[in-house]
Image 1 (cartoon, rainbow, N blue to C red):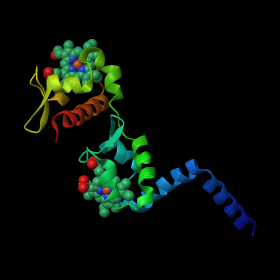
Image 2 (image 1 turned 90 degrees about the vertical axis):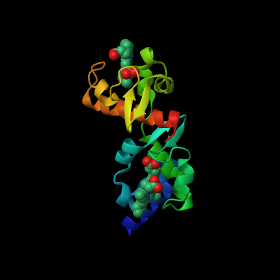
Image 3 (image 1 turned 180 degrees about the vertical axis):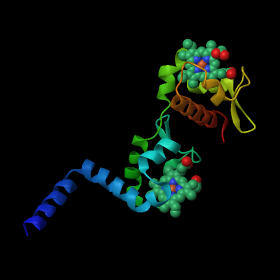
Image 4 (image 1 turned 135 degrees about the vertical axis):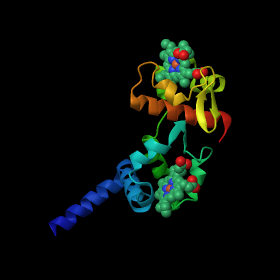
Length: 163
Ligand code: HEC
Ligand code: HEC
């Protein structure tokens, strides 16, 4: 009896705190409806999703991820919560601003001036070397950094040049 009353109390408190209830909602929704195909939410976001110009973008679905989500395995009311959950763990180009822009201007300008795709591979215009190879000996970047910045430049090149 105590236990039931206590559960109801907790449920009520959660219900009265929209932030908490929503966050739990999003995690539960993800677990029930998305995880079987996409695995853990943070890992999925880190691997495929970016926040650019304040908008969440996918690897494939660059333009309007919200619209895509609306047609993608989700009951209408969960979209915003899931969008926020994914967004909170997505990548951003901010590191380029901090670590590269001092010499290379903004990421989009840099891509426009210096990066192109050759045979599907991101390549430096001046060096003619694949970006991933070039970065391995540039600015003492670690292996993880090289992976991250290669992904970032690839993402920005999709934004600049289209898919
Ligand atoms: C039955 C498997 C399946 C389920 C369940 C599923 N997805 Fe997907 N999802 C896919 C596939 C396959 C793709 C890639 C195909 C495409 O882009 O249309 C995808 C693509 C995506 C993308 C775009 C990724 C990108 O890089 O552009 C997002 C975001 C996404 N899913 C979110 C979700 C969310 C949120 C849920 C749960 C509500 C969910 N998915 C449930 C199979 C699934
Ligand atoms: C202190 C200045 C400086 C910083 C900071 C810097 N770079 Fe560079 N970068 C250069 C110079 C100079 C070149 C061209 C000459 C060279 O090194 O071969 C270059 C070349 C490159 C190239 C090859 C372009 C081509 O046309 O072949 C890439 C890719 C690149 N940088 C990425 C980055 C990234 C990513 C960062 C941030 C992690 C970064 N750089 C930070 C100075 C810098």
